[in-house]
Amino acid sequence: MKKKWTILLVLSGLAFAACVLILPGPLAAVVGGKADGGATVMFVLGLVLLADSLGLLAVGLRLRSRDLNTPRTYDNREGMASDADRKPNPYDMPSALNQAQMGHHGPQ
Image (tube, rainbow, N blue to C red):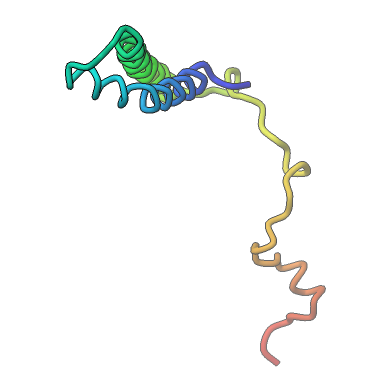
């Protein structure tokens, strides 16, 4: 299950990306004094997206901090995959039993 702060941080990133795509053109028109009605609306929309992304980022980081600072117990921990479900690590050193089966008995 996704945590709420993860969703907020993703939405914050998406809002910021939209702001970066929308804001530069209308910003140049508004600063240059050549903005018509459409450019002004897009400028305001870009500013709203920027404020929205910063607000979502602040709330998401606050919830993340609160979640990470919560002490964990056996009662409130999340389910974990059992060892049988995990893929074996191909770079893991063989155990002593496997070494004996492979013929590695040490110096002779």
